[in-house]
Structures are given as structure tokens and as C-alpha cells.
Length: 159
Image 1 (cartoon, one colour):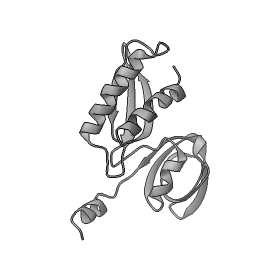
Image 2 (tube, rainbow, N blue to C red):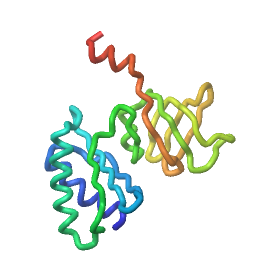
Image 3 (tube, rainbow, N blue to C red):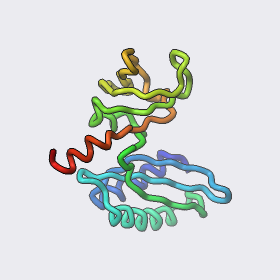
């Protein structure tokens, strides 16, 4: 079963529990595949949200005859160092630092850290040091947030 079909099953289940579908990873384990589903919510998804989505998703996938029989399902939040699966997810992270791994090299680099300036359709405008760079999100292998933990603690403590 392809990722898009699985996404079509996950999205309404996550929404039924007040959550948003964030992303999906499928990896082949030693014997059986692992489906890693990421959900989020406005105030952050809770462990109960993950449990509820996991329970309903397991039931729904078991009813789908196109789906593989044996798999490991993991449902979690994207976390502070979240991975971005779609370019639109970056709109709330303008000005934040990202770690990016490209599919192919640009300027002799495949991996770099950058500050996100803007997102326009699938194109990201980035500051890589003093250099400005525009990257097509579809040419990115991995894009993760690099959280500023000092800033997070200040916000948490109301300072």
C-alpha cells in the first residue's frame, strides 16, 4: 500500500481525535515494516491522543484488505526537533533554524544548517551563514527543526 493511501486513512482518524496528521514514515525492520505516524494539535498532542489514534488506526488498517498483514505501528508527536514532511508545515517556523539534508549537492554541500526566511509554494528561501539560498522542498531528503532550548525555557518560564 502506498503512502498516500495510508495518509487518506490516517487523516480523518487524527481529525476525529482533534489532531492533525503531521507525517508518515515507513521503514523495513528485520522481519516486518514499521509505520511511524506523527500527529500534532494546536496545544500539542498528548499521549492519550497518540493512544486513541493508534487504537483506531490499527482497527481501520486491519479492515483494509489492501494493507499488509504484519506491521508495527508507532503513533507519536513530531517533537521539538520535528521533521517536516510538507513545505506548508514550515510556514509557522519562519526565522527558525533548520537542519537540511539534500538529495543532491548544492554548492558542494549536501547537509547544512540554515535559517528559514520564507516559504513560497515548494520553494524555501534560506540563510546559510551569510549566503542566501533558494531550495526546492522536493529536492530535500530531510528537513528538521533545530530548536533553541534556551528560548523555549524562557517562554515556558514567562520571561
